[in-house]
Image 1 (spheres, rainbow, N blue to C red):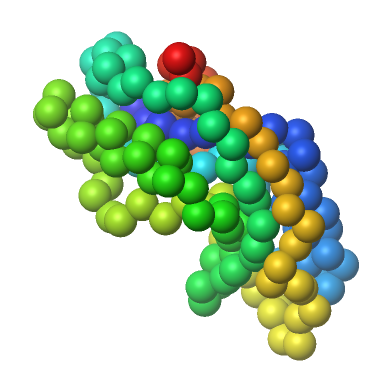
Image 2: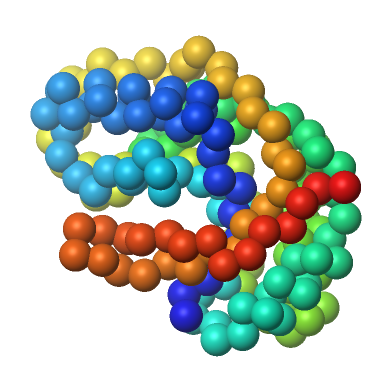
Length: 169
């Protein structure tokens, strides 16, 4: 099972990102666009791991209050495009505490430094003379919980299925 823990996007920031994707498509940028329903912030990528109940138990040990985040800028690195999240101490603390809980439970995860973002385009091609603003209209959303997600490859791309959810307190 290919697993990750994430914050799914609410409608407003997902629509904002979908509009940026539309702008890129109109400028003939090709690549692997993330479907709007798959947009999320990855808190911890676990990868191949066959014990989702153990992951849920670790997630349940992390206590956090509801908080808000803001999607407010666009960036790219080589052929990968992402939407950035404004600095949030609550989000940083959640990611840190979650990763600590996974480590204490001996659950393997990608230990790359957490950078709050939403990937919306991979393997972008034909990016000459693009006109895409780096700053976008801010979209605020509430974070009321975190999801354990299963990632499977479908005929037309990745399919994400929520296996469990932990609510903020």
